[in-house]
Structures are given as C-alpha cells and as structure tokens.
Image (tube, rainbow, N blue to C red):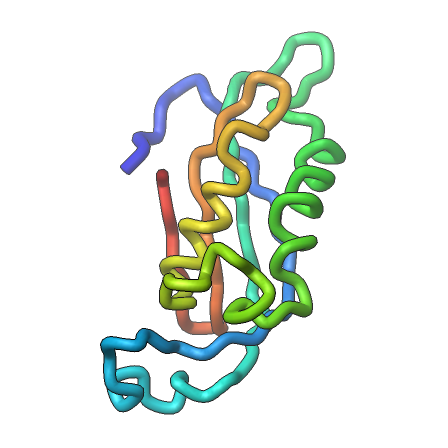
Length: 136
C-alpha cells in the first residue's frame, strides 16, 4: 500500500456514474454470484486521490479542471451509462466485480495525472455499504 508521507497534500476528486453489469465467469456456477449473476445496475461513486506538493505560484497540487477533464475522458466516457459486460472490451474475459472495475479505473488514469502530482488511490463505492480501494 502506498504510504502517507509528510509534506504531501492528498487531493480527492469524486464523480458518479451509472452502469450495468452481471457477475459471470464461464468456469464458475452462477450460484456462486447469487442474484448478482443477473444483469443489474449501480450508481457507482469513484474517488480519485492524487498527491503532490503545493505549487508555490498556483497554490495547487493539481489543476482540478484538468483532473476533472481526465476523469471524464478516461473513466466516464467508458463506463457511464454503459453495460460493462458488453460495452467495455477490457471486461470481455474479466469478471465485472467492483474490485476489477477499480483496477480498470486505475489503469485508465495511470500516467495521465497532470502538474507533477501522482495517482495515489482509486476508491470505488459500488453501493452505500460496499467500497473498494486500489493503490496500484
């Protein structure tokens, strides 16, 4: 897990997207996934945490408008109002669990965080009670 370090500021940007999926794997009995083996949807909340040092001229760790634009392009355009099973090629042979969706989001953002900040954590709330965190 990435370590919290002194001197860094941790900035979190939150977005909400709606998507459908079903839990499925050809080698796993649907009973293992229970009712989630049926097509259903969630209003996911994704939180992207970046860290960096405050730039002395701007006072920012990262320009939030740039971070928002990147999240729109890399996450929202691929997942919002989509059927993850059929609309997102990455999931053709990968179970569409919250854990795997969170890893996918990290992979989409990795290397695209601007202004000298770095990707620290992706959090994905699948429901009010279920949360996944991934630290790369």
